[in-house]
Amino acid sequence: MRKPIIGVTERGDASIDLGWAEKLSQVDGAIIISKNLTPQLRALLLAHAGKAIFHMSVTGWGGFSLEPNLPGWHESLARLQGLVSAGFPRDHIVVRVDPIIPDDCGISIASVVLHAAYSSGFRRARVSVLDGYPHVRERFREAGVDWPYGERMQASDEHFERVDAMLRRSKAEHPGLVIETCAEPRLKSVRHCGCVSEYDLNILGIEFDDVDAAGYQRPGCMCYSGKRELLNGSGQCPYKCLYCYWKS
Image 1 (cartoon, rainbow, N blue to C red):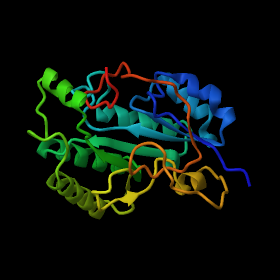
Image 2: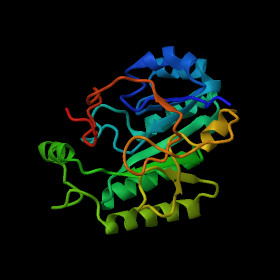
Image 3: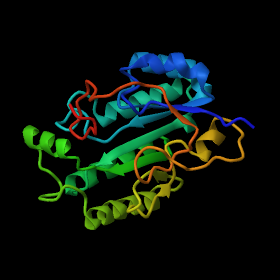
């Protein structure tokens, strides 16, 4: 049986580079990822609603220094609600609190966003913890934003434990909330699965008996190996988020 191919938009933002839509005929389904549900992106998602799962990044930092060119979380969730009202399947939507800044303020904001997403009817979330790339730390310094890890480059076990405690509380307070992560083995209270997983194929109605979790990107990646990139980005996008892993 032919392995299904699932497209993804990880090398950029699907609201800026709309070229992914022209490639949907080459894949069996797609994970479309964006930080900004623009009118153009909304129209394309509605046109391909049966073939796409939409990951919307809602970190809680829109409009602040960390995400200077993005809407706030109230607006982002309102746009998601509008997408559902227009006919996009609610169970095809994943709210990404990605990344969480693991200091007091960042953990509190992530908790608020998870609560707001749940209250808006969304039951599936994905999370990560800020990666401390040297160029990311330099961006924080240039923007006058406190680096959450002090003299360290990466999150400590204590940072992960504090995020885990918040995620446990969120799940306890919100029955049915599913929180996922990939390549974050130090988070213990979440479902570990790839951004493309057997669960996604089932949602898309794709039958396949051997949905592996081989990964192919960074260490710990658990994505299904039938994943194919739909964008060609190779640098920081115009949203200019401080935490972006691309160098400027």
